[in-house]
Image (cartoon, rainbow over all chains, first blue to last red; front, top):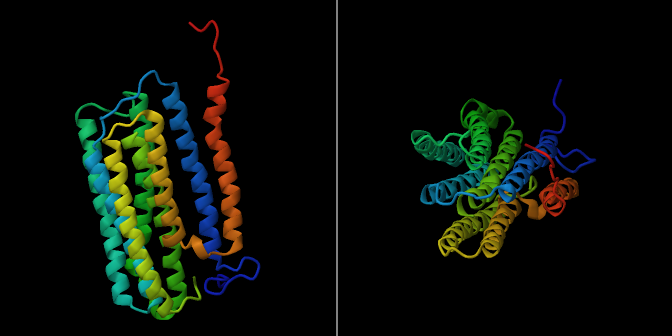
Amino acid sequence: MEIPYTVTARPETGLFNAKAGIWLFLASEVMLFGALFTTYILLRIGAPEWPHGELDIPLATLNTAVLITSSITMVMSWASLMMKDFKKYRIYMGATFLLGVVFLVIKAFEYGHHFGIGELPNKSTFLGIYFTMTGLHGLHVVGGMIVNAYFWGPGSKMWKTQPERFTNRVEVAGLYWHFVDLVWIFLFPVLYLL
Amino acid sequence: METANPQEIKKHVRTYITVFVALLTLTIITVTVSYLHLNIPAAITVALLIATIKGSLVASYFMHLISEKKIIYATLVLTAVFFIALMWLPIFHHANPVIYKNVP
């Protein structure tokens, strides 16, 4: 059975189905991270004191730049497909994947430092919420990287047979990746700067 | 966006680069402001304002929300209502906290 509305828009929504689907999924993701942000506010206003200066701001700033750069390479990979330039698509999508790796390596250095000095999630409320929020975000990065790697590698064969459908797939993967960037844009000031 | 032609996409690319530069600049500004050690309400306002601008840029341009179909806006308005309700919970709690009596 053929999947309906992978290229043409469904008349009721004006969208191809995957795009409607990803937006509904992202709406649920807003609530997931929203619940954690609410938890953070509750814990923070209820805490007698809140630590400052325990996190590495320069490293997190670098990671913010890395994720923002990966967002532009992601959107450029989709734009390259729209301009029928598959070679550029591979370069930009490959760069997006590698920037995801860089983000996780930097995060691993941060985690390693905390673990090394005994700052584990169970040591304080602050560390508990820090590891929960950044850990969940990190898992989202890993999820996006798996999808991006598939579309860079084996999944890209679809470009030869159904280029429009493949372009739509990359657009949907991009919407997810940008959302992951968007979450970090809020996590960074909330956890590191305030 | 699925109907855009290559010429239009080239124009979009210029916008993406402008947004990218704006995002990096705003990141530098927010970090610099954090080193000024403003009082807590001012620091929260500035940090969240800059994060909201950055988030809006990503959503509007990278996620193409600036020119999307009505059903996506409707979904997001509904999400925003529930999200705002969720964010109010701590404020309600703060205004009317549960007081535990006789807790050892």
